[in-house]
Image 1 (spheres, rainbow, N blue to C red):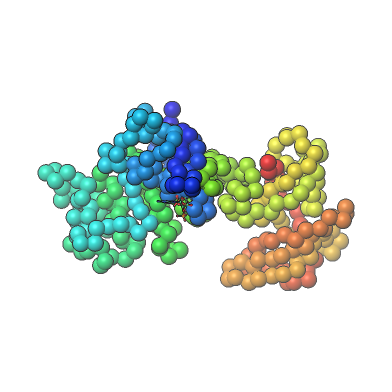
Image 2: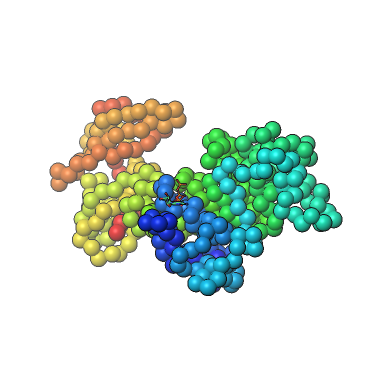
Length: 346
Ligand SMILES: Nc1ncnc2c1ncn2[C@@H]1O[C@H](COP(=O)(O)OP(=O)(O)OP(=O)(O)O)[C@@H](O)[C@H]1O
């Protein structure tokens, strides 16, 4: 049994089913990211785990102890679970020291030392102790929110889009810092995010939700390269999806014969390729199978729309990204080839 087990979890708000029958296993010490479009039920799922919502159906078990089930509901304050919200949700009228100290028992003899230690753990120094939250930057407030959540020594940490208000350069640094701190503390973590890149880089396990249901959960690499369906494929990155005829371990498509990653017995299928699998060799008039139709410069990369055709008369327009330096001009003939194998979608 995994550290956290969600089984058949459901939550309705009147006629809206926010979470519908979710099963998910979270191993001890791991990092799981829950991703999905807006309104798919991510926050509700997190609130059910935290104990701020009661499930209509299903169960939540943490390290063998039932937190929610048909006849049991452990309230939030009794769960060994920390939560960092999108805006940090610090108490505005309390100092940073008091915010962090909130979770430490009042009479604890080394309270001040613990607060100082937690502050340093998240990369801040004692100079911040007596400031109020509004005197800190967004990134600093999120660090304090993490320190406050860690003060309770949670066994499970829930992060609800904690980086979304930060600018891009700070996000990556914060993500790394948070992952490092939680890993060192041995705290199992669940991150909710809109951002697929963040999910893929932060987590050991990614779970994709849609309309309250869990579409697929697995390792980031597996989900990116072997998504179950078009929705998961497109949600986790740029996807080239092409119709194909399957024969002899190959998908025959507009790009020619491409090896497939399974031995599924199907005559036709939609195949998935990631754009980085497509090699583009410009100016090869003899073996050319494509023409660059559009090119849009965006700094380090150019987005190209490339028209490709095969001998069978099939044609398709593919969107590819290439380094801007040396990117082919509109009208250039090119040879497109595929590296690696194609994945068959359901
Ligand atoms: N308290 C509530 N009362 C009624 N409906 C609610 C309530 N909370 C959430 N919902 C509905 O449940 C669904 C799931 O909402 P939830 O906030 O869990 O989605 P989300 O995936 O976290 O969205 P976002 O990414 O936009 O934050 C939505 O349709 C939402 O309108």
